[in-house]
Structures are given as C-alpha cells and as structure tokens.
Length: 440
Image (cartoon, rainbow, N blue to C red):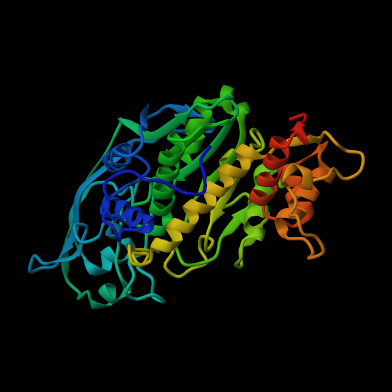
C-alpha cells in the first residue's frame, strides 16, 4: 500500500525537491500548443508516456458520441499579423495564445478597421494575452495584449493563419492499473489548453506523478487515469465505455491545483458520495482555509461524469476556483504563477486520499462487553493518571464504534481525529486480536 512518502522517477540532484521535478515536467510541456485535437495533444501525451505507460486512443472525426460529434482535427504551423514594413506585430511563434483556438486557415490583406473585429484583448489587464476558442463554429481570430492593440497604427496588414482542419481524429490518453478488485477509482485531468500552466498543466503533472507512485504500490482498488480534452473528451470516453462505468466507486477531476490559493473541493452531484466525505475529512482535518462547495452543472468535466444519465461519484479538486483569479485564461497563467510547493502539496493530499480509500473499512470489536484491558496487550502505557493522548483516544473510539456498522472514516469524523490515526489504531487492535474485519 502506498504510504505518505511519494517516490518519483529519474535521477535527481541532492537539492532537487519533488516540487522541482513536477515543475520541470510542466516547463517541458508549457510551450506546446495543445487543443481539443491535434499533434500538440499527441506530443504532450507522449511526453507523459515517458513517465507512465499511457495508452493513446484515436477516435475518428465524425464519430457520434451521445449528442455530440467528434470534431475535425486542428493543427497549426504558423500565424501572424504583419504591418506594411513586414514586421510581425502579432506572432504565434512568440506565444501560442496569440491565435484563437481552432482558427480556420486564412491568408489575406486587410485594413486595421476590417481586422479589429477579429482581435481580442483584456483592457483591464493590458499586458496579458487572453485565451479564446472557437471549437464548434468555424471562424478565426487573434489575441493580443491591450497594449499591443492600442499601439496598432491605421493601414493595411497581412494576415496569415497557416492551419488545417481535417477529418482525422481526437486523441486521449488512458492508464489502467489493475488492483485486487475491479472496483475503480477514476482520476481525470484535461489536456486541451495551450500555454496555460495552472489550468491545466498542474492537473496533468500531479496526475502523472500520482499514477507513477500508484503503479509501484499494492492496490486494493483498480485505478484509471484519463488525460482528455475538455468536454468532448469525457463525453467521448463515456460514450465508448458506457458498459464499464458502473465499476467506478470514487472519482476526482484535477484542475488548477498549482497556484498559491487554498484547496477548493466541489462535491459530486450526489453530494454525499464516499469521495465527498473523504475529501471533506481530509481538508477539514488539515490546517488551512480549504473550501467545500456544493455541486453545480458548470465548471470542469465533473459535470459530464455527474450528468443525470451517469450520476457518477466524481468530485473536483481545485485551488483557487476557475474564473476567480485574474491570471485565469490569460498569458499570466505562466510558469512563474505555478508554485512548486503547491504542486507537491496537491500530490501529497491525493496520496492521503488514496490511503484513506484503500484502508477505510468496517471492523467488529471481539471484546465488546466492557472496555478490554489494553495494558496487558501492550497498548496502554504502564503509568496512569496523566490523561489521554490522541493515540489512546483513537484506540478507544475504534473499540467503541466497531460494531460492524461504522467505517473507519465514520469513526474519524465522529472522533474529530485524522483518518490515519484511526486506521493505525485499528491495525494495532487487529494485531492484538481485539478486532476482526466486519461487513464491507
């Protein structure tokens, strides 16, 4: 079983931290122009495949997936707007956010007045490039800083978007780690955004490191990791795997977990699924100002797993919620915005979650009539009269509530003690012959 100590792959320097290694992977992925389809997605998934054995799936354009259709594949090679002197005043090669995602190919000359309706900026954040998309309506456009926009001079401009929209495929990555049971824990991260670090290189990197650690651990549950483009990705996966989703017992969407903000957990549509209780316990047990939010049908891809036709137990883990920080969906969501300590803390929280899910169980007290004598079993200190510590209280709580109807998580919540302390107490009591496994 995976412990709280997370191991990672590769040779590292003596001063290099886990956060450094995670940030380095994000830095390698950052320049790639990812979208909902295309070679940028494939390149990114192949880089992740160097760390974990991802299986890449290709779903042909035009494939019906519930109420949607897999779109044409988009690839871009170059794009720019050049002034009369041939200077690139907007240049995709300098930042891939400069082009509206899924822009149709164009080669034209036009005046600034004609071009303005195709230009997008953020006046209140004048030095940031916005992230804009047009996946399902064919059009084109450019994004630029408002400072750049105001500096454009009247006149004629050359406009080039060297891109293609072809009937190829949608790509996604999947890793399945079999456990002792075919009941599954699902982790999802979206892989469709271009150079945006927190949203969502943070999710991709943390998921990859978690998968790497789990691949080396004993597992009761089976684990499925999905690296999918937003919206169309999970809809496609659900359409192709409808017969197996009943195996999913717990699920978590990972997004925006690398900024400096406190954790935010969004409950599943069920609101009281085991994943909801587990995350609430871990976040309220830890120091800090974590937020627990109720489900709503907007946000990340938890809304696909939680759609009424599936209603899966899938929540969403974030830090600062999407749309509530000024860097969101702009070029300011860069590698400097991505915190090494936040990436590491997010991974360790997920390790604690896996520990809880794997070790939660019901037990039965084998000496339920009165309190059993702990001292003769080496479970109680020899000198009394000094009060009780948290370990001793954990032993007493486990003994008292282990009648087969309470899980260890139930006991931890009731006792207001960390799950790990309760589980360790249960293991001690089992070793001492005072507990046996109960109904699961």
